[in-house]
Image (cartoon, rainbow, N blue to C red; front, side, top):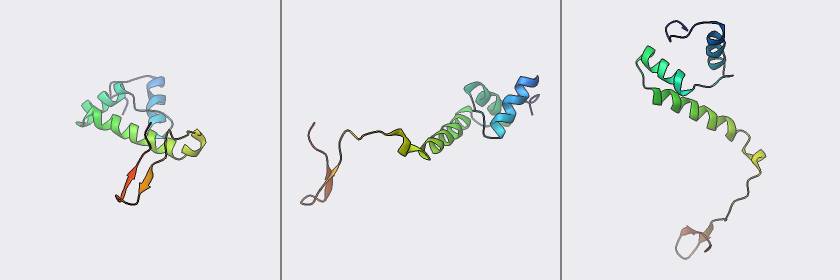
Length: 86
């Protein structure tokens, strides 16, 4: 696969192995190489990477300890969520 993507050498093989095994990231350069080799868009490869990154961090979002700036309130009279004035 490395030769098809125009990457050679041990470091290139290691990079591809890491990506395939979920330990490496699809960079813009690798995304472009994949798009040329496979006929897909680089944006789709980067989108897959971003989706994976977001999924990964969402598994630990409670550990982020982020405090909401405001808590939405339910307006019973209007039947919708409202937020307090800032």
